View (tube, rainbow, N blue to C red):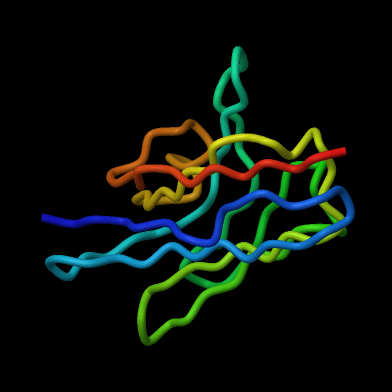
Length: 122
């Protein structure tokens, strides 16, 4: 069994920062890409950021320049540093591990975290 555990969410004021972590546990596994999705109330899940096995990073346009995805190779842990947060960033953020970047783009991932709430007040 594999678990992805997100942490770091919370309530911040607009302009503030948060750092999300996604830590795997359980059996060893391999992945082609890991990333973050988010879902706001009444909206569809949307892609936020991803990093592939080679270290290439990808971001949705709305977070470029504000969010940075990174990884700790030894721990297979992925981070999402979020700065200059806006109320529009309010959502539940989900970590996902996928077989490839193509699968991640389609939202077809092998493992998903339980989600962590990010709330940005105005």
